[in-house]
Length: 288
Ligand code: G3H
Ligand code: ZN
Image (cartoon, rainbow, N blue to C red; front, side, top):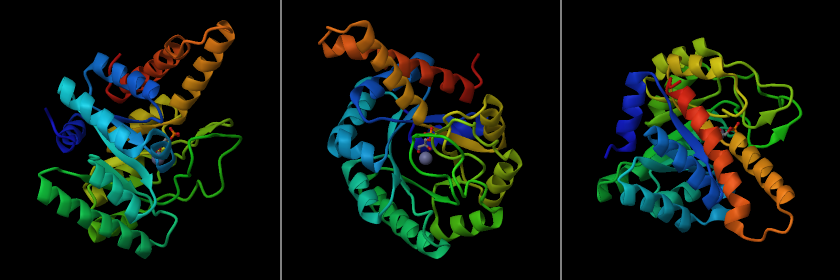
């Protein structure tokens, strides 16, 4: 079975992207995994600090590891947007395959310093255990929270400069880089800005490492495909999964007011998530 690093390399070479999808519960994990298996594509499961707290750090790590080993399938686990060295360390210690240290709100220097600390720790543990833990960091404003917003939040127009990206990558030694190239987290009622694909290509050239596109929910299809062509190797989707879950659950409760069997109430939510993920994975991989 391929490692995560190998899967990312392959995505880079094929000019496709691996889907990264967030979960808080078992229903989402099943929906995402069903879609990935159906298409026989690698997949990354993400948990933010809040999602991880709800689902349980050890529980999530055990679930993903169990699926990977049981099915010998390239499903990986990421600590999504973790804000401190301590929270990143806890995930590395628990067996996560990758981590994102999110200190983009700090100054460039502070961000680089904490990021380097995470990279050093990941390298040390990788060396001692034979694992290959990847570290991602971000620079610039990509918003926070996979929520529904009325409009584009302030600060969204400030994009990452290629020269800053190059310096940051050189200073920290990260494996993956998340730039601000137009998208922001969440679903926005007035629509999302376009992705600056030229900037993606410039940042890719300047950094020479795989790029990650955050804030995928609600982006136009051509923005995804242009960004992937320009050098994005992983795409994050969360809000669309949350919305699909909520809508399917509401509908199921409405349709079956006296049903109390969780499997019956929640199966439509699993199916709805599977549908969302399948469509996104097809798009990211040029499958019709
Ligand atoms: O890290 C998570 C994502 O970047 C999700 O963004 O909620 O817009 O899909 P989204
Ligand atoms: Zn994100």
